Image (tube, rainbow, N blue to C red; front, side, top):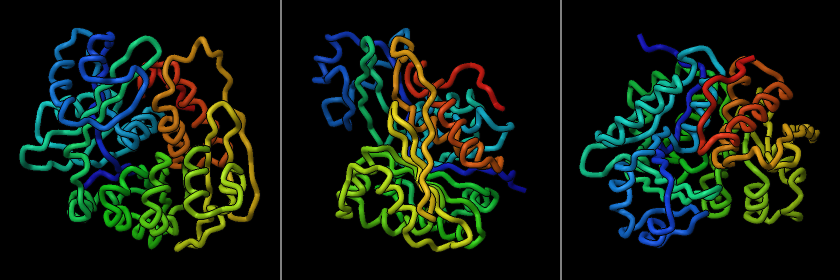
Length: 343
């Protein structure tokens, strides 16, 4: 019998390969010190080169997997399962090892052939980091993989679902399978816009899934991109955009939609379908203590959905999101401290 995990997360699994980089390495691969790009042919040898570095650190990355790891750190053992596609190679082995270190259960779908496991080279120089992403096998997951018995049993066993917006570029059909199940069974389906280009360029598929979303996550930049794509009157009015989305039609009327937009150092906005807005201040931190903001949004969602699984109210969910984001920005990369407060 399949173990039931209350929280089911899905997205693009990427092995983050973190190293300290000098100007010579960046120049050789024509990289900027503070940037994020998709790899092209000129970067193919970078990954093999940096895994030889003495200071190499492996992190189980990808937006949804960052969230899943954070949520699992706050929940009892075997509360979270993460699904995504990888190859059968050494990077997959490293990915499993890194995820296991955070207590996360992974169900990686194996993509046969020569395509490698997705990777992200994180080249750190001072406070800057240059991210070079190669999606590879991660973008090969299909709706058939989602429907496969092993994966679908995990879907059926969960009560809360979290999917990254990036995954709309991979398998909208697979996302809809899960979303429809959640609506039919009155379970909680949550999703993150993930990046401005999702509402900007994948507007149609986002709009197809939105009626199933019970909780929508994003930030002020993604809110503005959504507003521009939908011709809303004031794209920079985060509260108005959040309220507009909260009031959109839902497939399952039993659950009223929440829209949660973070705003960096400014208050987090939560909009309800009844038009009410709540604001929650973040946990202040001196700038000197901030190491790296990469993964802060994913961590916030990890804290939020962890408390959602436990039946927490909105204020409790937001507070735990703020706590986990506060911890992550004091680490290098989307990593969590050795001990976290589970209360």
